[in-house]
Structure formats: C-alpha cells, structure tokens
Length: 162
Image 1 (cartoon, rainbow, N blue to C red):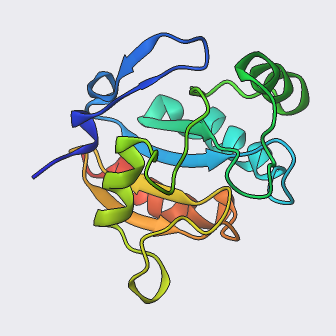
Image 2 (image 1 turned 60 degrees about the horizontal axis):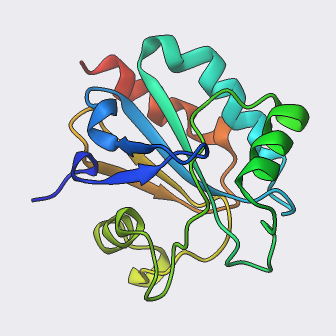
C-alpha cells in the first residue's frame, strides 16, 4: 500500500522535494489559487501553521490553475502573492494539475484513496484539503468550502497521537 511518502514534488523554487522528508508529521495538503473566492483561506492555513507547526503539523500548498484560471501566474508571482498578501510561511510547491491525464501523481493517489461526495474522485475546486496522519496515510478529504479553522480539532487529535 502506498503512502504520501512514496511521492515527490517540485517546490515553488524548482527544487525536488521528496515527501518522505515530512515523515512523522501530520500533513494538510491543499490545492490553492490566488484569485479564487476561497483565497482568503490562506489566512486560516497560515494561522494553523503558526500555531501547530511546532507540534508536528506541516501544510503543503499546491497551486493549481484548473478551476476558472484562478492561478494564472508563474511560480515567482505565486510565491510573491502568498508572502506579501498572507505572509505564507508553510511550504508551497510548483503549480500542478490535480485532475485529468496530467494530474500530479500525488493527486492521482490522493483522489483514488479519498473519494469526494458520492464516491467521486475529481477535485471539484481550489482549496480541497487532504489530512494525512504521521504514517503517511489519508485520514480525511475536506471540501473547498471547509474553512481551515473548522478542521483544527481533527488536526489536533492527530497531533496528540504520536
């Protein structure tokens, strides 16, 4: 059985990041966009990062332009927007596709192992969230409308189980 640790991704600076480097952390993986109605969720994600990273939470942001062309910029523009607008300190990755034949392998795995409403696999919109336990397994998939603060309790529960 696969885990999140079997994948790697390009960081927003272009470097390769094996997700195994996050082994033992609780992860929240989110597809993001800078020009989306849900973009203010960056603030809630950064708050979770600030308050829970020392307890073992790492948030991983994956920009995606597949929904309404709401992430049109290149990596430098995305990184600048995130830092200047929301002071994002959690790891951000290079732009990916989350649906279709060119979906990043991590997202293909996430979708097939944590189905959405009515068993659908496809990501419906920006800011879909996947909560990953310390062993690299998927715990839950959250809809884009689920605000980061609404899943804090689920995250804290995982952080308490070492």
